[in-house]
Length: 474
Image 1 (tube, one colour):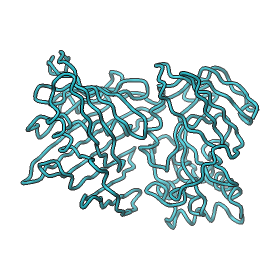
Image 2 (cartoon, rainbow, N blue to C red; image 1 turned 180 degrees about the vertical axis):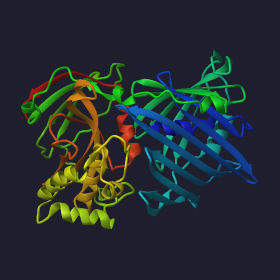
Image 3 (cartoon, helix red, strand yellow; image 1 turned 90 degrees about the horizontal axis):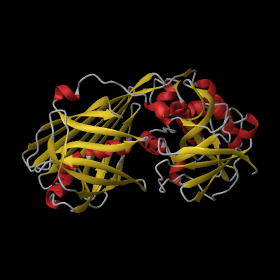
Image 4 (spheres, one colour; image 1 turned 90 degrees about the vertical axis):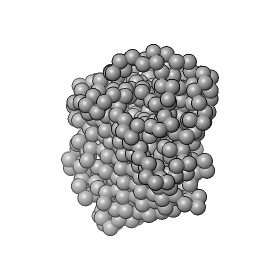
């Protein structure tokens, strides 16, 4: 989803020389309307102010999840960055980012769960906001075969991504307002080392009318139309059902308590599938297949030591907050070793979050501490934050977990999140949302609790299939 938001923010890359002040798009997922997107641009004296808002509604196992993002930017007429902002919304949970750019740095204020943190970050060299991206597109032109690159800064993630564009010959495109002759532009976005290809259609004045990007094995489509069309009632789409990965056979409890070997592959033949290796998970590349071996008991396999950030509080793991520190001490009692402390934290969080609900969307650890409800992500973030509050390095893993039955489906792997802590010289997993970690957990990505990193890791869903599952020796 994070890449989705970044591509939407990059839409002004193709705006006309004097673009419309307000442009609307209807948002479709697999042909069903799920939201709207609005882009606004206003010139005030020597400054250009832009705003882009995405609103979507997805169904998750019968529960409606609201997702939205508003990105703002202030730049000079020449496209130099001055300020930026972001408001990200997930099922009532909101985070805000405000930043000002000067002298090669950005002064940033981040508010999550009612707590604000301030920091100064280096501004990525050559990184552009919407007006700068718009000017880069104008400079490149629309001659078929034209190729150009730009570095797009995303406020919600506080990082920049390379976008390479290639212009193709004009073709007729059907739109809600009728057919238009438009130029296709193939885009390749690289964020976190993983490329994603999209396609935009623009007119001779370089205004976008259509955009397609792949998400979880289906197409997310934006079509330009009037406001009434864009804001019409949503049809909804059960995106969660698309994320379930069928198991080729039932898995027995005794198998999951040991070591499992899985053969994964992409139905599209995607050779770029990248899965992390951990002290519990080993990945072997065999052509288009990935052989993933998972041990329930961790041992030092990767020799990966914690980074300093793995011990520290951040915007989603507020481990220095008094409420978090109090809960951490309550959870561990008289336990003294890091391993025993993490085991007690796992048990404590499992009981502390009494309302096991899909309604939350994504809440920070501090929000969960104050209002104990949610699903696997809320459990994982609270476990990780409580560990850091006691000086233990932790991180958050997103991936898949085996379920004999879930949401009317049998023998499936379900999108899931859990925590890892560095204890006894290696990274060990702790899962408070389930009875515990076992060999039925497949890691897709490792992060620090940032929700956009979590959803970016789930980009693999819909792009992989499980061909074989077998018990293995350690």
